Structure formats: structure tokens, C-alpha cells
Image (tube, rainbow, N blue to C red):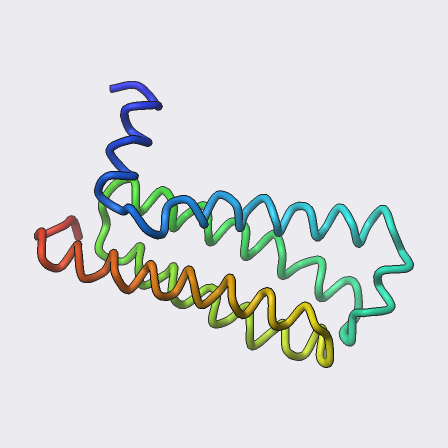
Length: 130
């Protein structure tokens, strides 16, 4: 199989979560780039830049791991897709509160969580991997 057929197979099996996860990795990388290249944006951060700049690559790595798990049809992957956004929103509340950005990131996280839940039901009904 080639990469395109693997991605198509993943999309068919996990219709809901898969499009959001690569975007989330990209968004985390963009956030780091903005904070590094535009120091004025750091005034929004309630926690230190060093702490916040560590969270984004960790989240990006966890979402990439989740995407790999989904591609391999692992049962743990949708659970990780639920846990990571929840942890991000808890962390984000301390970083950005109060901020209108919280509403946008919360909506995005709820979309991932709902989609992962749907995929979790799909895996349990289809007898997915371990």
C-alpha cells in the first residue's frame, strides 16, 4: 500500500477525528512560531513563555502519536484523542484566561472529543486493534 491508500483507509475507518489531528499539530507549531517571532504576543500568556513553549510541541507529538494509532487502528488512539484536548484546555485556561481565544479552542477541542467518541464506538463495534 502507498501513503495515499493508507490515508484513504484511515479516513474511511476513522471518518471523524483524522482531519482534525494533523491540523492540530500544525496549529501547535504555528503557535510556537508566533510566540518566538512576535515577542509582543507573549503578553497574553499568564504563565512564562518557557512553560507555554514546551506544551505545544508535547501536544503536537501526542496528536501525531494519536494519528499513527488511528492509522494502525489501535483501540487506545481515540482515547488519547479525547485526553489530549482535555489536558490542553485545562492548561490553556491557566495560560490565556481571560481571553476570547478560549472559546475558539474550546469549540475545536469539543469537535475533536466528540469525533473521537464516535470513532471509539466505531472501533468497539468493529473489533479494532489492541
